[in-house]
Length: 206
Image 1 (cartoon, rainbow, N blue to C red):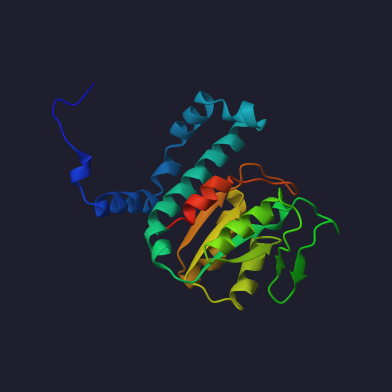
Image 2 (cartoon, rainbow, N blue to C red):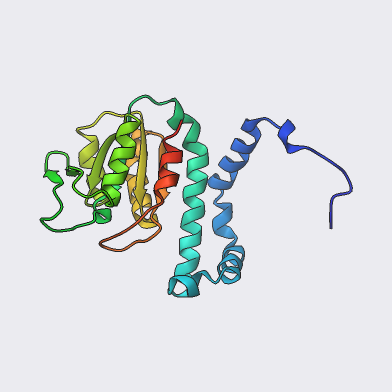
């Protein structure tokens, strides 16, 4: 049933929506709405389209919501930051063998792209980030973040990863209090993973 009154939410300050999001995050409201998540999965046939069990599809949806909520809470702080870094998963490299010319530096636990393949996702991310003044680190996994942060100074981070690795990364950065944005992979796995490059560029636009 429609409201029997009129209103315009644009009259509310941004802080209203920010506080609303914080409350949802604090009380994990979306995690308590398991039935809603399942309904979304069923409506869009997420499990069928992705070829995963229903429970796994629900987890994917809940993790995506987690990431979106965290991004809403952090986006303004990331915009204000001057020193920013981009963390890229090494599994999005086009080649996982000697054909990839990225150099691994054990001191940083990171690969550094040498731009050998134009259609490589790691290369595309590196170029887009460098154009915006970001330092780029291509990591073998979320567990490498703690070692990297002992070497690197930054005021904000954008991380690309699957939902599980994004959670590991946020846990590793919890004590640092560094604002972070997460970009979920659109295709996961151990190799040839993918993400939306256009969405990455939008994140770095401001």
